[in-house]
Amino acid sequence: MVSRRGFLASGAAAAAAGAVGAVAGASAAGVAAEQNLETFAANREAQFFGPHQSGIELDIQAVTNMVALDLKDSVTKEDMLRWMRLLTDDISRLTRGEPVLADPAPELAIGAARFTAYVGFGPSLFAKLGLDSQLPEGFAELPAFSVDQLEDRYSGGDVLIHIAADDPVVLAHGTRGLVRDSMPFASVRWVQPGFAHSPGMIPAGLTHRNLMGQVDGTANPELGSEDFNSVVWIDEGPEWIRGGTLMVFRRIAMQLDTWDQLGTPSKEEVIGRKLSNGAPLTGTNESDVPDLGARHPNGLLVIPEFAHIRRAAPVESAERIFRRPFSYDNGMNERGSMDVGLLWTAYQRDISRQYLPIQRRLEKLDLLNKWTVPIGSAVFAIPGGVQGSELIAEPLFS
Image (cartoon, rainbow, N blue to C red; front, side, top):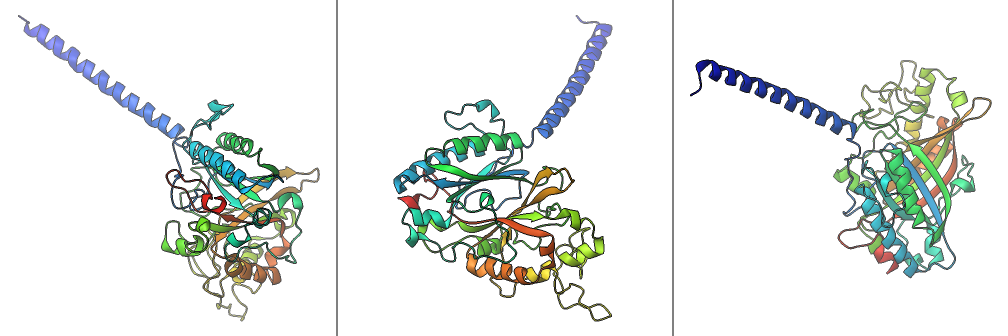
C-alpha cells in the first residue's frame, strides 16, 4: 500500500516530469520552427507540369542565368526531340530539388529553391531546320533602333534556356546540368547572369527596384489573372506555341556615373514616377493611374513629354506587355565606373503589335535614353508547357 507521503511524492515527480516534458516539447517545436525558417527556401517548389512553361508567371526569383545556344550544323529535327527529352527530364527533376540523371555532383541538389527553367527558340532556328511554316504570328527579329549599340556577345541565339532560382548554388548546379546535356546538340553563344531581391527582402507581389533606384515592372498584368492570360499566353496558331508566349530580351546598360549626379526631382521627371514608392507624379500610390493631362499652375505638364512612363503608355489597347527584369553588375573599372544594367525581358502574344509600337515611341523621345543603352537584343518563341509524358516543344519537332 502506498502511503500518503509516497503518493504525494510520486505525484510531484509526475508533475515535474510533465512540466519538463512540456518545456522539452516547446523547445523542440521552437527548434523545428527555427530550422524550417532557416531552410524555407530549399522547400519552396515551383510547378513544372502544366499548360505553360514555368518561370514566367511567377514572382521573380533571386538569381538567374540566361543561356543562349547555337545549333551544331548536323542537328536535325529528330536530334531536337532527343535534346528536348533530356531537358524535359532534367528540368522536372531540378524543379523538385533532385539531381539530374548521371549527375556528377548530386550533393549540390540541396533543395528546390523555386528553381525554374524554360526553353525558347530564336527565328534563326526555324530557318536552319526548315520550319518557317511554324513561325508564330508577330514573331521576327527586331528592327534596328537608333538608340541601340548592340554587341554580338550579348545578342541573338537559336535556343534560349532561361534558368532562375532563389539560391545561387542551386542555380549554378542546375545550369551546369542543363548546359552539359545540351553540348551534343549546340554550342553556347552567351551566358548572362542576373539577380533581383533575395527572398524576404520585400513582400510577395511588390515591384522590385533596379539599380537606378526605380521600381521596375509597375502596371504589369496581375499574375494568375484573365488580364495576364490575354496579354501573355498564346491560344491560337501552331499547336506547339499554344500555351506559350513570345519573349523580347534586351540587355540595357545603365550610365550611373551621370545618373547619380541628378537630384531626386530631376530623376523623377525623367521617369514620371516618385522614387520613394513608384507612384506616378500625379498620384499617391504605385498602382495609381498616371494623369497624363495634369498640369502645374504655370501650364507645364506634371508628367513631362519626355518622361519614360508617358512614352511607354499604351496608345492602342493591344500595346501592353509583361515585364520581368533582372539586374546585372559586373563590377567597376579602375576609375570607379560601374558596369551595371538590366537583363530586361518582356512577354506577349504578338511582338509586332505589343512591344514594337512602345519601343518606337521610346526611341523617338524618352529622356531616359540618355542614361540607358541597349547593348544586347534577342527574341525567342517560348513553347507551351508539358503535362504527363509530353516533351517540351514536341509538336514542333515531331
